[in-house]
Image (cartoon, rainbow, N blue to C red; front, top):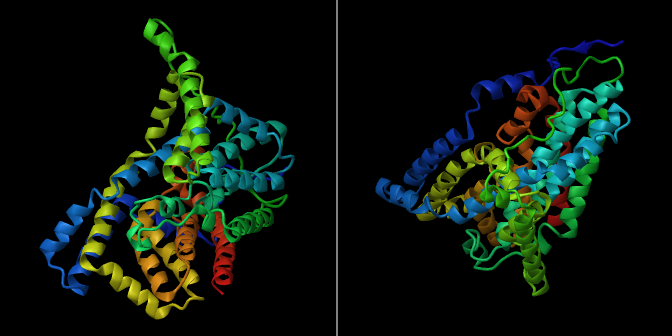
Length: 454
């Protein structure tokens, strides 16, 4: 029988990249602080802004994204909660029995995770990892050899299409009245029919899924290759128990399904009325739709409280970063850096190359601002102003930044942290495989942006 490694495979051309990331890439919060200082220095050196004016613009801007911060944190919180409801966990356990061989398992995990990410990024981020773990457990029971790091990489790679789907923060912000992008859009909104639900974006999402699924099939370990299987001591994560002991009349109320069911149905009615009366898709509507689904799936307020506590730990770090991104936006707007940077971008771009250049620049910025919402706060106004000067459709600018943000998530460790914690792996264990996703998706997305801009 072929040898099974006791540790993830170390032989990889990505080893230098792994070592660099682990040794030199600081936390996302540190990046936000350093970026604040860099932008402040640039404002004082490239414009006529004084240090006092920089500090005032920064302080005035700190509260500028509070509503948006709440919306983003809710998307992550509700997505995580939805992924851990009992019906979804049972569905994942059932899906884990579908793959009949290892090659199909890698492709299957990626496709399911990608579909979940298109529904909501918080759901997709967790579902892929939970499914990878469930499949590894089922494979061990059935005597099927699967390389666990590749399964986890496939699950995380589904995240590469999240901004093209229902919860894409950039397109939804542009579609939300009075958002922070409104000034750059002349007070108008860009409906999601021109971004998320445009034919070219949906075809691009399909192309990315097909290409990356094929790549996972091609890079799978062959019959005699050494692999790392899930240790025998690790089982299915299963459903966490929570204290729903009914002792007092108050406990009986908290254990009743009636309250959550009534509230969930009320939200469904509201959403139906909203769309029937001509309402559009916004960040708030996305959040209320997922909250309605959670309320209908849980058994009681006890369970929803438990899920909230479990999910809250994933939101804390993001809460502190958004005021810093808002402060950066305040400095850039107050000092004139937005106009300065957009003019510089216009000088090197043409209407045809704009989309690709915006995509590549967004991929770089994502290393420093890993939150999609935070990145749009910093980069969105610049790209929209540049698009306006070049006569480029603003929907192209919005999706180009969105594509760049989701693209380099494949080698940016920030969003991989909860995935790796669930899987019990390190970034170096999956990075070689997610780098392949980066290459495949990058070719597709760049090609789409060129074709749309022609």
